[in-house]
Image (tube, rainbow, N blue to C red):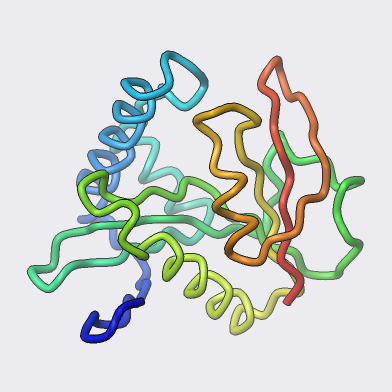
Length: 171
């Protein structure tokens, strides 16, 4: 975070935010596809999918000064299908970080890092013992980013032909 930049805060998304969140996720998917080619990251979520995510987990957003959503992520205590617990530290209360996206025009400005810091703050308050996530084991994957944010690599796994890298942050 540079001097003069306002501290980013994640807040719970509301149902009325679903269309904007779906648009943000779709824009980032199209950007990844244009940059790295077709892949699992090319899936375009719908507003309906975002609303389902809101029912099953906590979806968070970051907004700019004008109130526009510029980043999103979700946290859930329910283990996603693509995660194999055997790769992670045994803890009582893990959370799983999913669907993180930053507005394409604002990437590489520190917003993603601030989102990860906020996710850790929220997880500590949840309370949780760890945050677990996966990243594509491909050029479109964000594994290096997660490592720079303090997440420890926990192994690689292929789920339904999609190669993944696992990361964990103990809290």
